[in-house]
Length: 188
Length: 188
DNA sequence: GCATACATACCGCGCGGTCGGTATGTGTCA
DNA sequence: TGACACATACCGACCGCGCGGTATGTATGC
Figure 1 (cartoon, protein in one colour):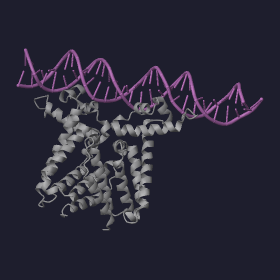
Figure 2 (cartoon, chains in turn brown, cyan, red, yellow):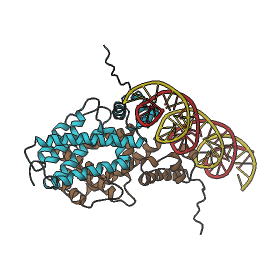
Figure 3 (cartoon, protein in one colour):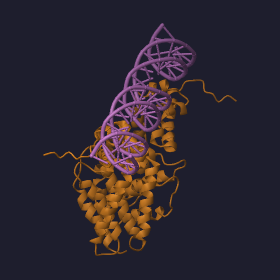
Figure 4 (cartoon, protein in one colour):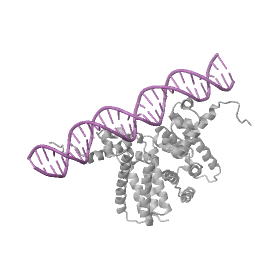
């Protein structure tokens, strides 16, 4: 009957909760809603507690961001394993992974964080380095200009989602997505 | 020898200067650098003076934004007039106009403001309405999915510019741009 | 003289961050 | 097995700062 664990203090749980709540707050109230006070309160912790786990707000954001990148990496790797065609394999996985996030319940995790990313040079660097690393890693299959164009279009489509006022999500985009994926399958 | 005009107070000049300085500050120090204090000081005016011209900071930003939209409109219209091909005429002008901004001296005017745009629902709405208006206006020439894809890719390319760390501007993008424009010329 | 066009001084607020104290764990040794 | 020592986890109150915004004074131009 008692689900209460013996250990009343579980710091790593709290740490996780802080990261999750930060993401949730960003998704619900935009990047401006991510204040240390709000994050701490949402995680059932005071500000002092938060600063015990993270030396600064920036550190929290970076941690959250690299968390999301790791998640994206896993998803992309999973998608790539089920793709029989070599040419453009990473690009297709990238496109699909980016839009798998859109469909997610309670809004995109990336959306508001990306806004913060654009503003914060440190996060920008994290993203740039990640993309650069994966691109050089798949240079032999995904270096074609046409593939880069497809990725750019996916980014644009994703950006247009950010722009949507409120929850207006025109479903016509799905066709465009498939169009993009198809474009990666033909060499030249 | 005296270039000083008779009228020592020229309110519309000050107003313009405020808008220009706001844009300059955004370009130089990012969206976070656009504070009323900084803008007023840069324009050689105190905060009170700024609030005499604009009822709020948001009003200033909206005014600046619609200013830029007007400029973009003019540029697009100019480009469209010299384009003999009907199909995709707006799309080509859109792409070229977006990237004409990149080349500009002292950094893009749009770049940092767009970051603010993504964050601010009011500005987002302005942009969405503008794009919607122009798209319905050129529905007979620019409604094809392929054209939309080209515009999205342009947006993605532009976004990737925002992401660049510092001034790292890989010149390979120019080829992609031409590739995009070419893609708009073939129907289906 | 009277509206306009500013300057000056000030306010309240919420932010990120700090600090001392206090519970709560955990290893140690008799 | 307990008592002790120390480390960890967290609370709660506080701080300085810079922000957007306001109220009032004052010089300029028609």
